[in-house]
Image 1: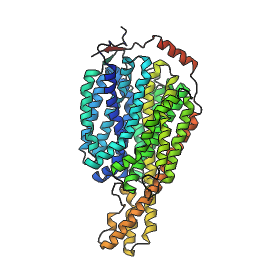
Image 2: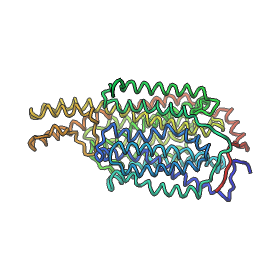
Image 3: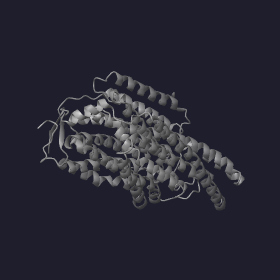
Image 4: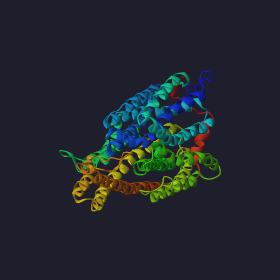
Length: 556
């Protein structure tokens, strides 16, 4: 038996797949389930919009930055060990998140969750590549596509149910029994793969990429709070963003010098045209999904006044259509070029999102944009299969593992960038719209209330914009020492100001996502519709029995 084979009597591949899938699903679910709880978290912890953005981005940032690093660590100490460690860290962090009593505590615990997710997520691939023969791998990896779709569906719906019935901490408590089950099952059903060759970590690369991303994301998220100027002393928002850009440039330079010594970012995979283009497409999708769900979940609850579960069920139309049509899309791929399906899917997704951007108003009904959700969901069904097929089809076999890590990392970086960029646009537009709306509505209020009314909204951006489920936009100072009838008049006016301001701030963020997806569709035009002959020959040789021999399997 070769070093990369596993004794059939000792390993149950399907059981191992179930355990690994359940662990991965838990991390994917936490990327989506928090969105629907945003307004309740904002109310419960008194968190401003900038802090809410950090609740989302602390998870995604750690997850994105450390995926490739933890994959390399798996090569060093064994993927099962890190899978168990990552699941443990994630589960403990979920408990800490549920017990958080301030925005800062929740942000830090979410970052710890992201660390755990980053440790466990890349470990399944090397295990599955070892225990499943090549002819069965396509079906195995299709499971992960289904899991992603289910996470998108279950996040808003399950999250909405839990938040409505049991409060926002319940979305974290639900991870505790699942995490314990996954850890116990991993020791029983997942084989222990041990490395047979020595690997080294690029610690300088990890440091530079982390500092660069943190600088850019921090500057974009916190920019509105500091009015895009000075933070303290000589440190300013533009300086922090510039430092982040410089750190990322140094990271790329450092990687260029390490291409022969296990770099974090291997440039070789980008020489393949399809892979390079599909990384752009995946980054665009990661960006657009966040730019879509982030403002929409706030809009449904804070503007339309829906409960968390009603908001989740409204959004669920999109992932339901995606799941229902995914099987059709996979069948069509055997007859139609994946390139053309991908471009059609991207255009449909962009059209659906544009429809929603045009249909939203402060007084819209919850089903006013159902057509856009259905069209966007149908588009997504024809994106995921083709994009992964095109990305990996022409890769040389020895690049498959690292390419998978790069794809996942770049998609998550797109999501992190969206949280920062869209958050910055949303905060800036909302602050401006609140001020302008308050000035316009103040004329209809009693003279004594006009100045504090306008002042309260004008200062909202610097004190942290509130987007809670019960948000009316009423500054406390505007209601102090006023008769009840006047206070009610002010409250009604403030609610109108907030809802109109948020809708007008939300619409540009949706169109940013549309523009990004259309750019990805244009880039996809340059992908190869047919396999490259050289890599096809390599694949045939690999199918005939060639194996990579840098791992030793110790089956449980």
